[in-house]
Image 1 (tube, one colour):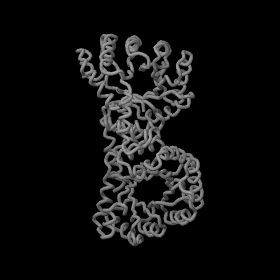
Image 2 (tube, helix red, strand yellow; image 1 turned 180 degrees about the vertical axis):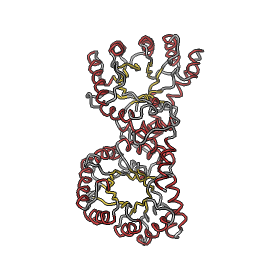
Image 3 (cartoon, chains in turn yellow, brown; image 1 turned 90 degrees about the vertical axis):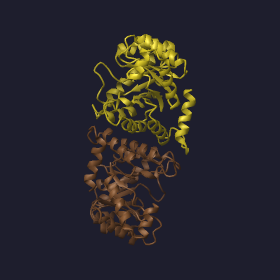
Image 4 (tube, rainbow over the protein chains, first blue to last red; image 1 turned 60 degrees about the horizontal axis):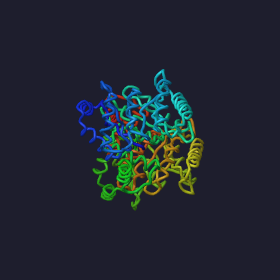
Length: 268
Length: 268
């Protein structure tokens, strides 16, 4: 599983304050600790309450780059903020995210093609998140086709079936599993798949437990990337074990350590 | 998930000694603690080293019956031992196990029909454990058909795709997942499915982690029963969470407690 660390996000109070106070150490420490814990890329989001999100994003990316050259996933609802982040983060970065709504898809897929970046594609349209697997797969296929016209390969895309909080919409968890499997059939080679894992457990009292169980279930359905909290050690141990059980990495006695070590080398 | 507690088994040293010394308290305590931890049925196995397994099985069942009327899974490689256990355990018990080898299947399916018991069917034949999902499903279908001739419904059977130690045969874990899904298509209504979970982690240093991750993966593929260690609290929490995520039980804030409480009422 390609792990995108979720912690550098202004929705967390400590990050919000660090952004406001331009406290570079807090941000750099979060970058380093997440990479050390085994993630492959770092999500970067100014948070919803930022009053000058472009400036904040520029500061965040510059600050993180002082600590690491790891891949960044530039995360914002606004195209202008993503553009500013990508300009600094460079080729190979991840745009988080676009959707099947044309006004969202066109500029961000153009940017991905131009800047040689990868693109997280939410399978959502004007009507919201479709209820069925078939409709979500259709949106995924449509985005793959449109992206191809711009020179983006399916493997440049991460299709996101959209995980809803289980406390709000319990049924959607299983629909997400089936959708992950379906995504692997929409093109050859298939696109990558990604979920924003911790959205699932929002509002529950057992966040880590729910995240861990669902991560294992999703890997069994072919999930190959996730945005999650890499500082949850038990979660990362589950990630390592699912790679063994799904036959993605070779079993050895110390497979957890081997998995995290291999990640650390890549992230460094 | 219908949980069959695995602890009353002579392969564990403390149980082996309790059987040898006719120490009823050890056995009764294991029965009660497993049921309190949330299992639905108790596996009963004298262990491979018993020199008088029929006598030992009779003593075990009588001893357990002094403590609980819970469902028992009478577990032995010998038909004579199973017969002796089932005679005492009564209708509704589980025979653990038969296989697609005729000399194993015929007498034990006859016994299941006559004693009104359920039957765990290993998808194994004279050649051993088949490598592919299709071959295992074929053996399952054959056993369902033969059992039907004797008046057993598909729902009286638990098909077991056979979990091999991941340290020995890493690939088979994913084959088991796909086989579990296939088993649900071989009849309508489908048979139950079961795995001997802890076999998977034999010889590894991370037994609970592997068991927990695979249990979640298997439930995502439709597993509805497992022989496992219910005294592993974290494993039972994973069981509870997978039932929520697979939509098998309704979400509530205290879903772990609700799940274990409902089990305790049934097991009592």
